[in-house]
Length: 416
View 1 (cartoon, rainbow, N blue to C red):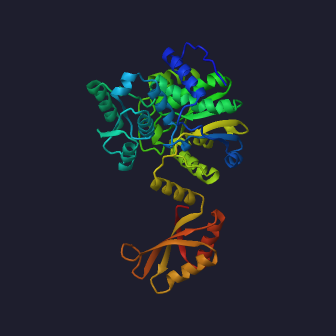
View 2 (view 1 turned 180 degrees about the horizontal axis):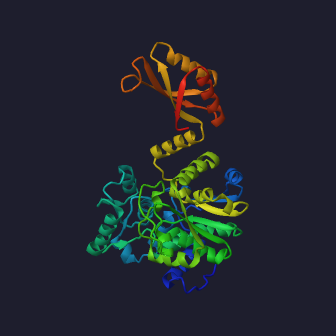
View 3 (view 1 turned 120 degrees about the vertical axis):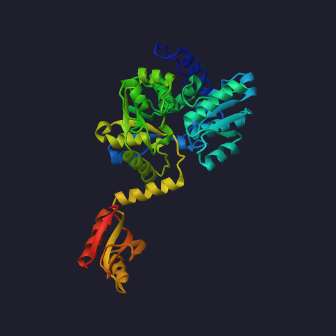
């Protein structure tokens, strides 16, 4: 299916040119980019009372949509630019996407990463054929050094989002969605620097002009929202959605999003956590925090999307396994399936056996136990234990607590 590019005074001419070339490449088949599945999330749809479809960009080779923009930008380079090499600042998905496709095309890539970048990320980038330079404490320091290398060595800078060909490359994600089915009430996409949302908006302008376009930002990093509405919301903090934790949105992306996107919503950390867990538990899909932002937007305002046909994407699945483990356990605690019980005991033999028997009789599962005899302000003959218990669900946990109290134990709960 060929798509014409409709002129629009709000869209910079260089972006229109990049779109024409990119969509021609896309129609011919972008080599090594996975045409990822676009699936109906039936169990999530039932839980949220809407019809939700998700594009699984976590199934790209490096686990993120960023490969699209990186490859398209590399394809646009002249022979001279390819020969000299490219440079980018990134500690995440852009680095790996660029490293992979530069290596495939025989282009030397240098990735500047902050000094605190996890060793595993730097190693993975090197394994894809790139040269890794550690510089500075934060992304802005790394970006400044990448720009220095452009001046010093003549390298070509591959910006992670504010580049016409990168934006055009990201547009192929939404283009695949809408070529498969343009009949959606809304398309929701995360916004960090804005490359993905800008690209999605450009594709939607041609294929589904009446569809509502909604961007999502983490509440801690509302930079694009601030840029567009002039608000002075605070920026910064530790967010689960580090992939969209951008302090300065792009100039090109801001122009496109301001012209074409209907709304930007801000989501809190609890909604992002619930979204990651819901994807894993109900769709067996692994999403990083930024990758789950679209679903987090629906969870934050269910009534807005009730009964509607909605498309979004898991734009990345590169989440630290220790963080994922913590999220899953926190979800178990919130649902009442796991709790830490503090139980006061008389310090005589057999007390732990009595507690264990009550939990076993009510079909609970003891996960761990910790005694506290010394560091306590209780009387000398009294102690307490912290015992982690797993239950089938919230009502089951209530039955376990009731059984313990019925036997005379004084019980306090944490994480339930």
